[in-house]
Length: 404
Ligand code: PMP
Image (tube, rainbow, N blue to C red; front, side, top):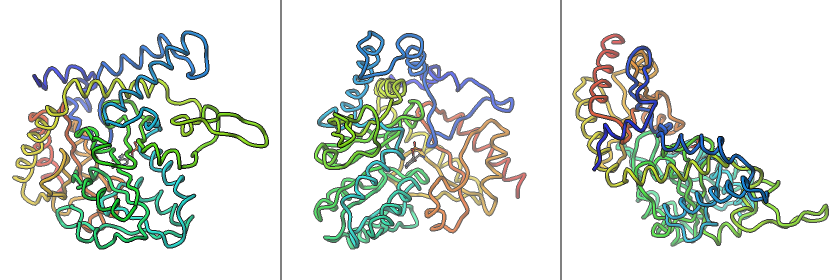
């Protein structure tokens, strides 16, 4: 049975105070909080079996290697990848995207086309711009509508035999829109293009089945789903990962090295040069266990309840406008009040112990679309409560009064 008060006891940070007020943490889309179960795994690693992996015969190294590889298997099972070696540990979503963009530099030629969406995070725009600069390929953009949804008829019109790659996020970090990736993947494959899905914002809310989706690549970061920062995963279909060249050279990723020629290790090690974030990888696995224990079905039902409640309460405030009004969205509300600068509202909310994100959310093209400098973004997680939403609403009213 889902009980938010019991769940909150797992998160030590939720009982701290900020500026003398109980912390209300609504910046979950930037990073999620860490439950004691995951903190314990991190402490256990450094207390009991901290060692380098894949190379030691000693007990500590073997224990660390076993648990690191067990985490890879947990991630494989969670995302339903066919093989464990299709899961590459990365430092996060940004690293995974850059790894793929770098690999495709070898395949793309002048006038090939790469499609991204208007709803992307900068980390899913800039690497592709750099790729296009290097190769002469052309970057095209799927436009969005006022509700913050992608315009699919325009996407259809962009597709052609020149399209080689399509990149979209599963869920927009700035607005929370859930994109129709099933459709995008199917249509892209019809013209022979590969698809990378940025799952940084979907994985805290949805369990993606990469085989059912038929995604070529799927990336995410552990810190979005109750794990630590600095670790994430890239799923790639085996055939693509075999084809792509390595991203970085170094230890761990080689088979044999001479000064004349180096041969590379098999998957997944080909893409895992150097000592990885061992503790982070193991804690990523523990975070997935934790989330599955809470249950994604429970999470989805509860977060939808929070989203509906918060949307209704916030819209009662005169002059408040919500950006991203699709009926397919996760528990994110991006809003502004009249022409008050979002930063000023965020600063007052912080004085009240309420953490929200203000600014362009690394998605400047979305802000340009709405012709605004930024928004106030409140993003809710399964450990938040309606009482916290009430505190937010009161805080926003107070900020409006002070700043109008
Ligand atoms: N894509 C999206 C949609 C995101 O929300 C984020 C994180 N804000 C990223 C990519 C980048 O993730 P990271 O900073 O963990 O690499």
